[in-house]
Length: 428
Image (tube, rainbow, N blue to C red; front, side, top):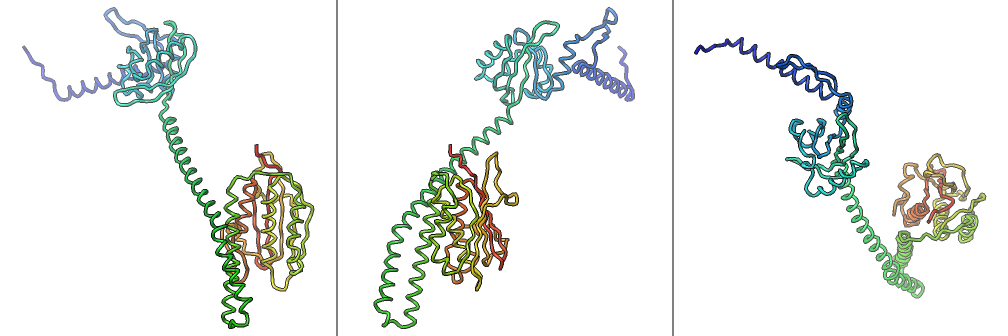
């Protein structure tokens, strides 16, 4: 038998020819899948035969191949008669191994009943449901959208598969964050409870020994005034002064901590009445400092009267405290129409704008936010008395009223506190 030996060039030429044929075959298959051709001429023993693609099938193929979701078509027996490339990626199989098998083989065992119910309803009405799609390497949560499809061969079942993995991951992340938030809220509630317990101790247990220090210090000063040296008397005055400041500080801390408790008793209140009550309390001090107070007409709004009175007291007290030397204090209280766009979002609510403007020592405007910080002082206590809590209390009260408080200042000129409050409190 004669053996034909081919040269290297001939072998290479054959290989190249086979590559070209394979590429043509792949191009033809892709064209068929995507509907780019509607007829094929195939050479056979009987000559050339013409095969046409059905128009309905062609349109459907074009549609599902362009989808980012998986898509399959089932016959009445539940066998896959067509699928797109995306479904092949989802199950990790080539399309040649998908067509002709039962779609139920990709359903996770625990979801078989759910799948059967969806398929059963899908032949009579559109149905949707979630199942787990299983492959050899992974399990994917998917949503099945099932509807009937009329093709030339008859009625088929079309299933669109949406990968729910990103959605499930987001849900798990949200659940974890919610659980973490609940834990943080619980810890915050415990912390608030501890703070309120501390405030209770401060208001009772700490004030009792403090009262005794004040009583016996005053007793020593009055009883032995003639026996004390000038230096001893000065030391005694410092004890009395320091104990008085500590008493004020304890009361302020107690007031601040109590604002954390729920107190939503808002009533429609004439703010003019509240201002007049505060000014009456400061009547003697106003005369001593020769202060001038101008109060424009103020509106009536829903507030907690006790808390709002405390805000007015703190602001007016500061205006009477931080005054310029040899300059009588002047305070102007008015209702303004706007606040440079700093008011809270209205959400179709109406707001009122209150202004407390003085001619005191003022402050650098860079401290406009920090002055509301707890224990924040811009001046030493030897120059001006105070605990540094008053404005923090005021800010907390205003925020409980769903409002805002803004500070403006200019050194040597004065300061202005602007309060923005909703006219009504939605407590329902």
